[in-house]
Length: 354
Image (cartoon, rainbow, N blue to C red; front, side, top):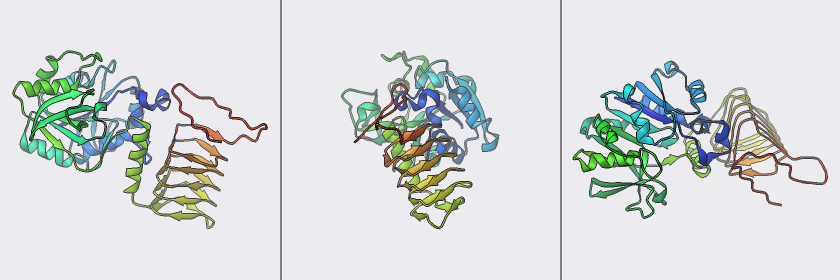
């Protein structure tokens, strides 16, 4: 069985971060989201993985490599434009051939991995297996309508959802998917929808097996979901301190401090992860915060946030519910009169409270 990870999306809902970075490489608990998908495939015994890439191809390849360090074999597959999930499968045919495969959206996280799901697919041998999860707003997802344990209809982002069962970003197919893809047409979004391909299978007598997942699942395409995924992962980390913490500092709860990191005269209240060579000086780092490598935080308070590499936060009384990109500098200006001085990219969000 092969794996197919889709990493070609533009990440419009995470702008401005994704103006300069692939959304699949934004870290959750200091690990790029894409790496969770790769690890899930490896744990399920999948050795050959195709990674579909788009305009962020070079960045993805630089971060992931050729697979040797993972003990895997990677094949990069270029998708010329984001023309739908079924289109991503279509352009991967030379890699997938006649083999069954797992398709995993590179910005999705599933708590319990996919080991049992791959085993179930291999044992039951349906033509397709779809994962479903109950959601509050199904109109934002592909939605399944069931009759007992049988899938009877799939609808992509419906205005009037037939159920609250959303398609999770993991699918399993055998070779029958090729006929389905060849027989569907682009949707109103001008995309080849995977929901239409699965619907074709349903209508033409193929077996489509639904599996309603236990535990949590997150599509990390939005800030709120990224922060929530970060919170969930941090809560299950094993605490360890490999960096330096001075006697004036206080460490509470589930905290990871990576090698080379320095904590001085600060209070760290977990769950928190502090990356390699970061420095936390005279600061408070509150729960559910991930601080990536080479970050400097001084005289500041940060909580429920993700801070990317090489950023600097100085003299900020309170920063929360935030995603701070790479090489960002946030500091209190000593200049008078007091004023906000901002340089912001497209689609930025700023909340200011006096």
